[in-house]
Image (spheres, rainbow, N blue to C red):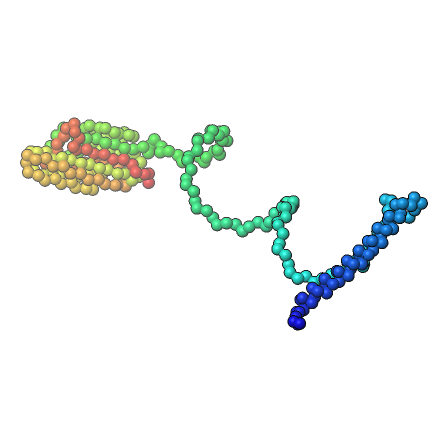
Length: 268
């Protein structure tokens, strides 16, 4: 006779099987007795009061005698298939504002827009302050005269007979002298061209008989030569300024190579 050795798991399964076999035998015995009782009830009309609400007696409760103890879990089966998607939940609350992003690059310059409509005329501005007085007529002093013909009178005042400007009538065409109408500071200018028949010329700017500026020109005969000068003089009313010929001769014609001019800078 061969001796078989059973381990713990096999013994546990054996006792489980034995327990269910005993319970099954008891269940079959109860079932046979119940079928006999039901057969009698079906043939006995007076036994309706012993029936339940559906015409048969209530079955006995076998949950206490036929149900074994809860066994231990041996292994976990494979997971079942995924269920159907659930109903979408409610919309959540808005999240907090994020931090400001970095400044973007400067875009290209756009096209120039169309000219807008002309606006309404604005109100009149405030009246400005009164301006300064203009130059009065007695202070408007200026003259210019030129030599229209050759001049050869040495040691005498030059008469510039062709007058272009004589504001205030301050230049005397008969004497060739300027007379100051008011006390002030005056500007004078004069120019000359040497006559071809002489080699040198001396011309003087005079103030009341005193020489202020000397003008000298030298060139061989047959060739002209030009020169000029200017002066700023402080004059008293009725002072006289003129140009005096020293030696030599001056060229004069319509081109005005020789001229004498002046004007008042400001009253003093």
